[in-house]
Amino acid sequence: MELGDRGSRPGSPFGANLIAPCGINCGVCMAYLREKNHCNGCRNLGQNLRKSIAACRIRRCDKREGMFCSSCTEFPCDRLRHLDERYQKRYDMSEIENLITIRDNGVEKFLETEYAKWCSDTGILCVHDKKYYEMREDERDS
Image (cartoon, rainbow, N blue to C red; front, side, top):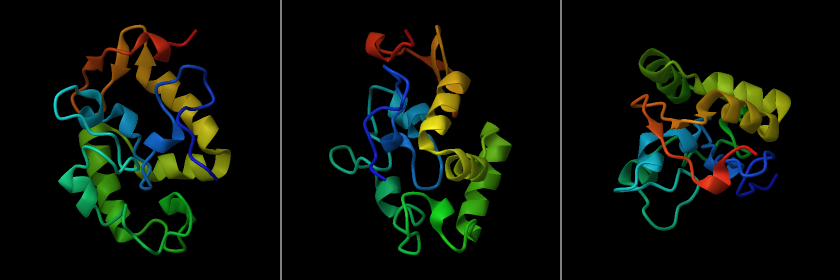
């Protein structure tokens, strides 16, 4: 499967290339949404590669056979469980649930549900600080 720039929804701010191997949607991450010290996401390893992404053991895992942790025979591993616990407690988000949705329904369907969950006329809701960030005009739902 190849990761496209955008999802199936025309003008969507979320593309498959923004879904990290662990199931986090980088498109709703504060580091991705902010302008200063902008991060390009876990899969976009060129410019602005953050140290935390470079060092991420989940992203660099060589046991995963596909694009996502759900393709691993050890899914969900202890590292992913710990990350998932932290995100459920702090941000009411589950990477494991995201990965199951992707595995069972495909990344395009997942991107559609992510758009409905995080995007509105107000902008894109950040999972970390619960603030809305402005959506570019070409990212708005028609």
